[in-house]
Length: 132
Image (cartoon, rainbow, N blue to C red; front, side, top):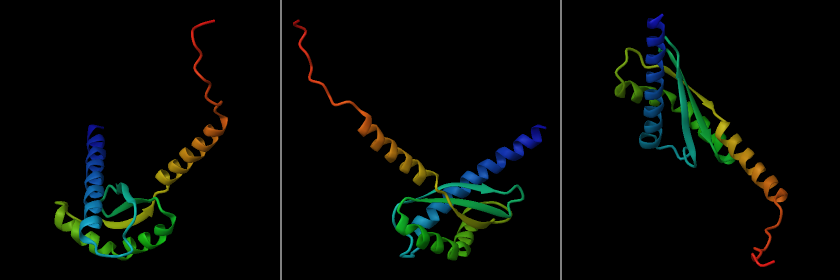
């Protein structure tokens, strides 16, 4: 059973390294005007056989979401090639870019809670003196 745990730890380490390198490649090596705005490579999930890697990308601006995802999908071959040069693994995984809406959803929930909370707060009272 320890071998299984070691396999999962290895895959987790490789997944994190893939996430870091893909993020760096997108930011430093791609010169596509569609790749702009606020985005983040949130995580990567590499399969145990290292053939595929799902790359989760969070885009905060709605207007940038589709152009950015289209640019990443069209540049996946270039990113895969650059990743193969950086990482020492037998086979560079095929990259599948997936939109991650968790951060945008969390920001939306925080905004709604803030708006509701501001309406629910009682007005500030003036500080009373200790004199009675």
